[in-house]
Every structure is written in C-alpha cells, then in structure tokens.
Amino acid sequence: MRLGFATLGCPGAALDDVLALAQGNKFTGLELRAAPDEFTNTGLSPAERRELRGRIEDAGLEIFAISSYVRLCAVEEQPLEAHLELAADLGALGVRVFPGDDTDADTGTPDGPSAGEIRALDRVTSASREVPILLETHDSHSTARQVAAFCALLDTDAPGHRVRALWDSSHTWSHGETAAESYALLRPWLELVQFKQADSRQDYRPVAIDEGDFPIHDLLTALDGTHYPLSLEWELKWHPHLPSLAETLPAVHAWLGDGSVK
Image 1 (tube, one colour):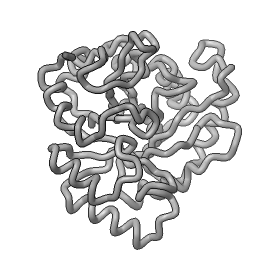
Image 2 (cartoon, one colour):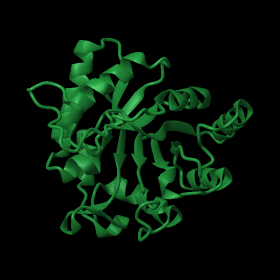
Image 3 (cartoon, helix red, strand yellow):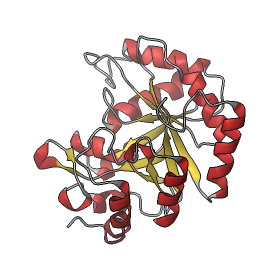
Image 4 (tube, helix red, strand yellow):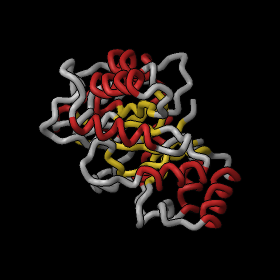
C-alpha cells in the first residue's frame, strides 16, 4: 500500500520534522500543503526547489500532490500555472485543486455545465504544464457523481485533458454515497484517495482515529486489488482539537490493517 499523509496535519512544521514523521511511522508519501507559511510554496527559488525535491527523494518518499487552494471554477483569477510549475519542479504526481463553483450553481446535472464549470474548462484547456490537475471531491462538487459528470464533460469537450479525480472519501460519504458507489463513478479518472476519521453523529466532525464511524472497511473493500496512493488528510490546521500526527500515525496502520473502527 502506498500510504502517505498531508502536511495539513502538521501546520508550520519544518521539513526535517515531516520527514522524521514519515520515516518513523512507515509512511512513504506526502501531500505538501502549498502556502506562504509552509516550506512548500510557489515563491521558492529554483535552487530551493531542487533542494526540497532532493531531500524528499533522498528520504525515500514520493510527493502524492501539491495541495493548492486553487478553485478551478471561481470567477477570480487563480494561480494554477504557478502551482503546476511547482509540482513539475518537485516531481509531484499532481496539483490538488478545489472545484469552488458558485454555491448557487446546480452542478453535475443533465442540464449542462454551470458557468463555473465553463470557466474551469477554459482553465484546463489553457494549462501549459503536463502535470495532472487533481480535482478533489469538495465544496460545490463534494460527491463523486458531480466530479464524474464534470470529468465526463472534459472528456468530450477537451480530449487529452490532464484532470484526474482526487477522492476525498469522507466528503462523498458525508453526502450519502457509499464507497462502492463513489469508486465506480470516479474509477475512469481516479488518481489519489484521501481518508480521515469523522463522526456522523456530530455532523461529520473530524475526530481522533478511535472516536469516529467513518466506514474504513468499506473503503478498503472498494479499493481491494488497486494500487492508488492512499493519503491521510489530518486537518489539524483547521481542527486544532484533533490529536497530533505524532499521536495519530501509529494508530493508522492498525486502523487500516483490520479495516474496522473501534
């Protein structure tokens, strides 16, 4: 299993600390949060990018994604190109983007694309880098159905596009899809799978590994026999009540290993 974690779970941590967390807990991949307050950001010089890539590769790790805050459907201009360039320089598998469509948009319906999806189509077709754009099941497109509908639109209107699906399995679960349903919908475009613990009794609030009811067994069953990277998205940056990654990572192997929630 290609198992990694997002640096969202250790906000502001130094590279040395992130590498130690990964190596000490037998994680082999990283999702690097790209932000001005992190060691990964689009302002890095060419020399800094080479050093960062070398340090991660020398540690035996791969970069699953550069986690940007680009909103593909947004009205405002978005720094997609800068993040694609950063991902290419670091050897990342892709750039995570959010859909970010207007909250009133009726997305993923047979009535045709929303105005935001048309903007996203334009951005995708004009992107110059050959780095995959990883569209997360998030915000306006939190279901696999919505992301799959948009990807199918791209297949028709922008053949050869580089958009792939990043399946945040907690989001699709919280919107009523089973893991089997979401996987079947996203499979033609799927590139990366995120998971986290949450409690449906608390409006899907992120919680410690042993305190929630996310159906991890169902996710692992749906992915059985596949080789997608699997990444823990521990949202400590936004949910400071969560335990640290240092406390959480050792428990993840047991959670995945028996496929059950305590």
